[in-house]
Image (cartoon, rainbow over all chains, first blue to last red):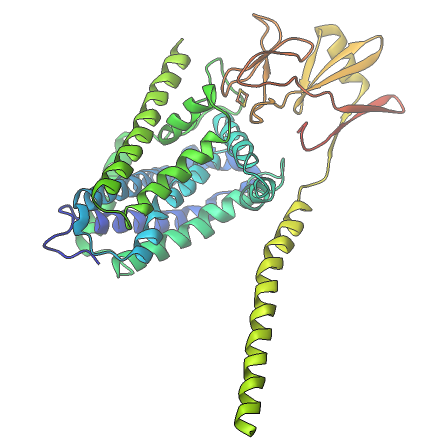
Length: 282
Length: 144
Ligand code: FES
């Protein structure tokens, strides 16, 4: 574990667990209202037809966002603590799975909306997975179901596999099952406050005149797909996760080089986000 | 002697179990891959009834369940609307003619030929067969 005196300064790890708990519990409450076989209609009913369900959906969405941001902040804090981390290599590698799993879970949630943008995201997700040599097609079937089979598999992984793994790894990492009372309160109140004023997007069933962008946290990868081969969209995350994991093993110059490579990848991510937005605006 | 015998038997069993475990570990992913590769779903069929063909002939073409149908000499001319880049559904672009993909902007001509990327290949033409006064479009995994 990270020693309190030398470890990260922010309490983002516990806060992340708070956001994760709010996300999972609000998701459990939403689950009976969602129908994978009529995805868009059921989300429209949640938004407009059922009292308070819109708030539950918004809390779920913003708590998930809070989890992602708190996890990133916790990671940045741990990396900034330099060689002072006391996390052994095994738990460190396991913990690096949190970020990709969080993104997969959130992408699953985005896809479950069932609108035009989410259908496009599902197609791109499948297309990218299928470029993985040998494993690609079966992995796409495992994660997303057979082509044209609807949202059943995505629902199962969003609500089951990814959420369960996230909680297990977060609990293992933080050595606690439940967040502290303070993290509960901050996560719940901040998600509910934002949910009350910022509407969660839900697009039309058919694409409109504008290009489809997908979730904001993947805009960089979407942008790369304009110019680079499709495999880039899984290679870049693999290199990012691998680079963060490798930080457990390297010191001195090797650590600096790894951090520089990670920084270059992130800069490319931001650059292609801008490129995509400019292309969309043009 | 009994001790030596039981030890060598135990060693033999240990080695055998290790080989069995290694073989199992090697075969398990292959088995999983095999099962998954068969879970690819059945080809989908789209029925084009005379009403759809009439509309397609009148309007110059209609989009139906992921394909674009035109009529040439009384026979449906069908293009898959699955983008050849990463599979988004392309849409007809009446202003510029042809088809455009909303995901990364690939453009195709009316005949399905790719005009600009990132897609590199043309839209597919699924097989079509006649069944009475209707036509059946057979969509494979790549067309759908
Ligand atoms: S999926 Fe059509 S351009 Fe990328």
